Image (cartoon, rainbow, N blue to C red):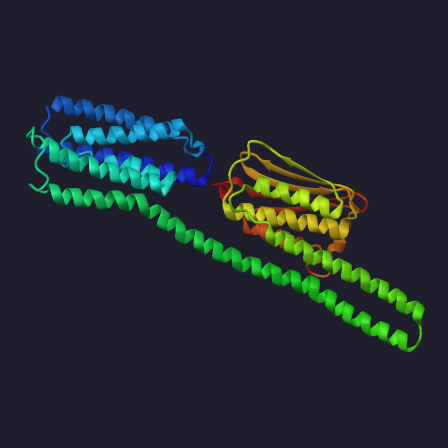
Length: 389
């Protein structure tokens, strides 16, 4: 119950369950004609259902486990609601609204196909009940008599709307988030090209002109020195471009952030000869896809900074998941630097601006600790309520 979405979903379901129960009590009192059973029997049902509703609210479903018991509990709740409606006059039952609760639960917490299946079974059960039992008992009227057909149509529409609306809303939200993420990624790439490749090409242009002038004046020794500097800049630029390509090609789709980070760390160590120790606190809660992608990009940017500037012999990447926050720490044993000199560097030189923007964009904090000869530690703290599913 620590996750924001889970809390909001359970709060909504609890309010709806109690509201539907209160309306059932109200209808049973103001419209006793809706119930043909003895008053004592109705009160027993209302009392038992009240206790059951309280238990459902204070014993929340562990829906994230997706285990057999989870589905059995949801199925049991659904069967109980349907039997309750059938036993209390079907389409004329005061518990029709209450019977939508399991469908809402499936729509908010499970896959769409499960919610649609429950909606279909509910409407089919009521239809068959009135079609067959109307032939044997007066409690159930024929489907085409009275308001039965109207009630069935309305109930069917409500069931399928309840089962599908949350997914349509979530789809629109997800598309907007993905659009914003794409725009932000394009901005980041533009900054990296400007601060990296563009500046390197400008520097190479000046250096080649200098070499040309030196060769004209036959100063071959200085020309060779300049050529060596050009070669180093070309190599660094190549490494930066390769690193950017590796970052863009590493995506989180069907795998978790732990797997994606593990794969990237292994590839980084292999390509650059810098061992990286990857530590994760377990169990690690599921994060939203946008947050997982941003954390992956932060780790990639931090490791790129290590390769470019730290001259480190080892790196430690730690991902912690406490009750209140998600923390990422990237610590190297490199040369470090003076924080007060950071502002003297060209904007984006260390990529720290990009890391800071990503962290703050998730509602988190960015902290860097370093000193000459003491290595560098980059720490990202994200509030759990904003990043977990």
